[in-house]
Each structure stands twice: as structure tokens, then as C-alpha cells.
Length: 72
Image (cartoon, rainbow, N blue to C red; front, side, top):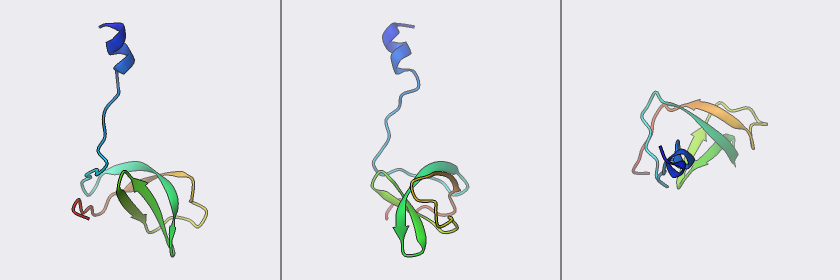
């Protein structure tokens, strides 16, 4: 393995429009609130986190994906 290969080990590209399956657990950064619902932004997508505590903004949380609409 070359030095270049070692340097790039573990790197990957991600899309600005991710796609997740229901049942997946992902780690996200809570970036704000929309009304009473906490939100996280992943690329161009907005993830609504319904049961987040009020002080969850600017923290990393694990969420279980219940539904994901790649079209929206």
C-alpha cells in the first residue's frame, strides 16, 4: 500500500441528497428548531426529530430513521 493509499484510507464521497432506509440509525447534528420540532440538516435534506429535548440544538444525537422520502 502506497503512502497515498494510506492517506486516503477511510475517505468517501457523500451526496448532497442522501438516501436512508427505515430502520437505519444515523448520527446527526441538531442544527435548530422549526416550531416545537428539532431539525438536523444532512446535505440538502432536512431531518425532523420529533422527540428531541428542548436543549438539543448544537448537539450530536443518534436517530432511528422511521421514514425517508428521497423525492422531498
